[in-house]
Length: 340
Image 1: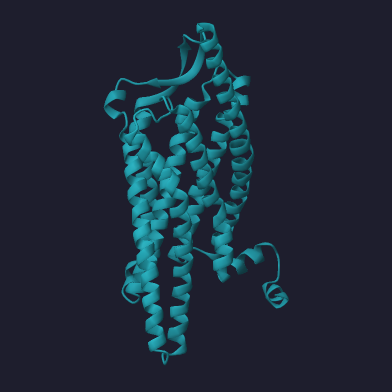
Image 2: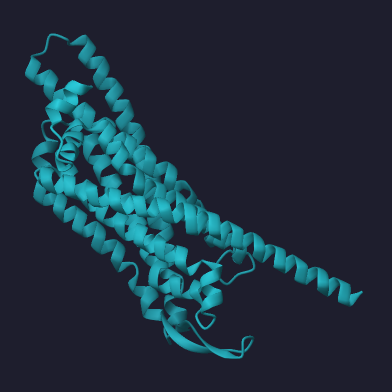
């Protein structure tokens, strides 16, 4: 009976590993990798477009900075697709790739996610204030101040990684089960004091940032509706004033679409971060490691989709972006418009 139970246990473990191999091959090696490669090209194009347009507006600066953080996130996730590939681990059994990614790419993904999230929040708040206080806010939100805010967002999020990297590091360890020396994670003497600080900061910044984006996007939508009703009642305004209002409205709609896309794609990331806090064994070395690994693989995919889809949003929602994009391709914009 004991031998039968042991055989069943081995069969279950084999089936579980086989299912993981199939999932990893489809989700990580194929779908996520291909979307990530397209996303890298898309964000490089975004950067080229905004550089060509010039950094004479706060939105261009913000969207350019988002493209930079999205590229860092995509590169980190592509590295994760390599580390989580079971066939790679078979080729090099002396390296614990899960732990290697944890140090070399895991926190980089989280940091880049937060940077994109907080830049999106800044753009949303800025557009909301421009709609509510169109005359006064333009004097307050300047190009220089926008650059300072973006630098602070990058610096603050990078600073949260310091406690983690002060306590963990890559090192060669002896594994009793494998009877071999493997590359894994080592802990410094201050590991107990700094353990969990970086992750708690990550959870707080992700959850608060996502909540604020939802709130500010809702406020922006309501303000646009209010402004629309006001314009209908005051249709005798000058053409110049109507033109300015239309430009602000188009910018606000673009920001709403970008913020909504970020909010939807960040829900899995925020949910899994909270689950890790409240479920003790939901982490890379816990009892639910398989579910943890699969869940974060899908969360990485949602983040990759968000980072790769911005070019479609910009091209569809911004005629200025579309014009610059076509010029980069060497196409005549007037001819293109006449063809349509």
